Image 1 (cartoon, rainbow, N blue to C red):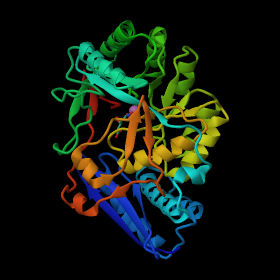
Image 2 (spheres, protein in one colour; image 1 turned 90 degrees about the horizontal axis):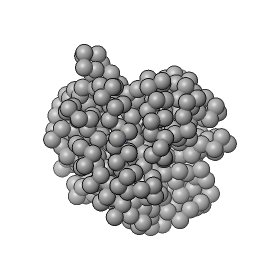
Image 3 (cartoon, rainbow, N blue to C red; image 1 turned 135 degrees about the horizontal axis):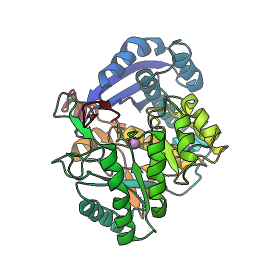
Image 4 (spheres, protein in one colour; image 1 turned 135 degrees about the vertical axis):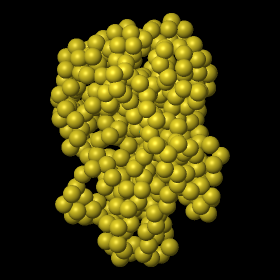
Length: 405
Ligand code: EZ4
Ligand code: CO
């Protein structure tokens, strides 16, 4: 089945998304997500200049070969920009294969391993009281797992919260340059255990709780935080330290039994290999969009399963509903699926552009069986929401040193 056309769309229904649409000779099309937060146009150029011209006329069925053609064939294999571009092509091809087979993609992987997808939602706030109020609402709504992030007292917001933007943590779309946030490791370390202490005192131990450090600690600081949090029995601590030096996770592991999650910035299985093989982590956070598509993600899942490591895909608002639906299929299949991050049902603008159908029942996400990914893209609606330059914030220590955000 020959590829006849590939189009790349950028739109901003609330925040920026890059979408790829591949069409084939018989009129079948597939869609994929290529969104790289704050670097969207680099991926668009990579796709339009360097990928789409090479694929016209190729057989859409040869997903494995096309993946290697784009990865190995380019010589410059890796990097967030090229991997997001390859991921979108890979996702669109799996969508086409599912449609041509008249099957949901999870069937092509080997079928369902579970009835629904356990998700964790976000309870954010500018005070412990506000976070706990939001947590209470989510428990009432049936969530089985929740991530807690809270502004540190006497600061103007931190990762997970933004001053004046209640319960919304990564504003995009109306500011052209990166905002700056101040970071104090000591204030953070002195405060976070109290958040989880009060959460457990108020809601007990039935609800699974997790927290994203967003790589702001050193390994030994992270080890200390994880130890302080041991009494509150977390599902996991995410991104306790950066991953450039995987042995940082070994240091944490030597000190604590708080489970560890990382990998939302991994580009390839190779980035995760050492941490998985050494059993330094418990959950891999790689998303289909940022990990190069379904083709490498299914290999990553199988490899991780050999070491008791589970998949917990990244599901922040910068991953489009196409990625969310790809995760539905991936997670339904992956025998070693753990939990899916889920930020809730989209805004009316988002759901005008992306058409998909999911339902949350007792903390599990469900979807209807449809061929392919079961998500569509409304090109006309997307035109109403043009791209707006927008960046994530940056962090600085109190003395002005640039820090990890
Ligand atoms: O900062 O998706 O777990 N979620 C996260 C996210 C990331 C953004 C980056 O684009 O860490 O909030
Ligand atoms: Co994260």
